[in-house]
Length: 230
Image 1 (tube, helix red, strand yellow):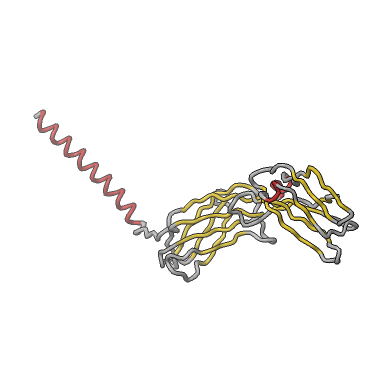
Image 2 (cartoon, helix red, strand yellow):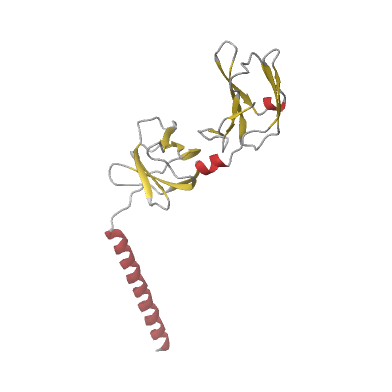
């Protein structure tokens, strides 16, 4: 009898487990089959001034729209996916003068959708957005000396050391003796030696400002306020 009781107990336990499994499957099947389309194959982000650029690749022809979320999915935008070849990258610029992105670090969650209500799993990618705080942290490049020669209307400028790896160089503005405006860009490597400006109208302002990029691939350049050299 002991053995028969054990066998009956095992059979009852097995039948109960099967019943539980069937109920779980019924619950899943009642929701219908979930169809997922492909997420974006890959993406890159490029920082900017209260904006950023997104470059993405998606090869699934069923994908017709992208839902792009940020701030823990509190904010979002929906964009149409244009007709393209599977290997083509698609460029998307997010943020403009009317819809600026606040300065900060974001994690984008990108979900592709078809036109039948199906969607992909999330594709996550970080992006940095810069603005007023970054701009206010910038300093004009230091000038060690500016030697003015009134005999030949020239100015010789000796520059200080580079401020940071984000510094690109300086833009110099002045007026020459013919009355024409002159605008010169000198990159940081060129500033290691003296900058000599000839044919300068010394009676008019000679100013410069320093250019910065927060990241090498950033789409925007930031400039300090111009200051007089003499």
